[in-house]
Amino acid sequence: MGGSIVVNGNAEPPKASTTPKIERYWQSPEAQRLLVEANKLRFGSAGKPLSDADRSTREWQQQLTDFLSQLADWTPNQEKAEADFYHQKCVVFEALIELITPGEQRDKTLQAYIDFITNSNLQQQSPVEWFMHAHSMLERVRSTNNGEPAKLLDAFQSSGNPVLALYSALEKTFGGKLPSWVTLSN
Image (cartoon, rainbow, N blue to C red; front, side):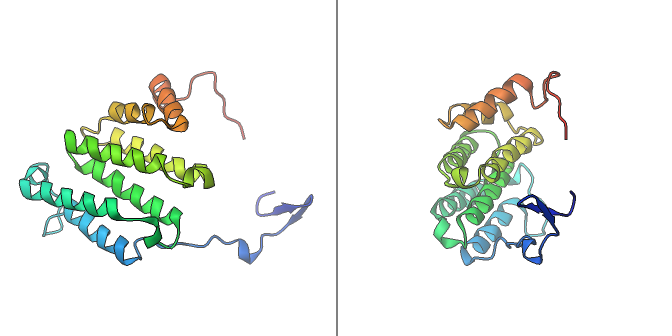
């Protein structure tokens, strides 16, 4: 019944109030400040992406350390809704993991991300929204040079979170592909 909502067995056309509300991110002063600082980590003064060499400098590493401290201090009460905070912070973590070269700092940032998602209330409130970012992070590291997807899957496995551990086991077993015995139907 495309375009209809079934209520008590009767099909009714959707009401205008069923239109989804669009929430704009990066609107709070703290979110805007973090977005500006995150962009400085990605782009040079000419607006071009920084090279690996640029991101290996002591100055960039100090900017990263300062930024990670600010990110750690960002709290849900600084945003309109906890879900908005969760989505924005996950996006920042995903971008950082992509930028930071493999090594101790990336490992620490990855652990901070795992700690953040495993402790989020969104897992109980909206499991699909919560899980979307774990999946997105894995896809992002798979498509990034030196992304280390195996390290992310190991972190999921050892996170203590049963959903992330199961996801890791499935990914390690099937490599992101459905087994031949799984069929999808409408």
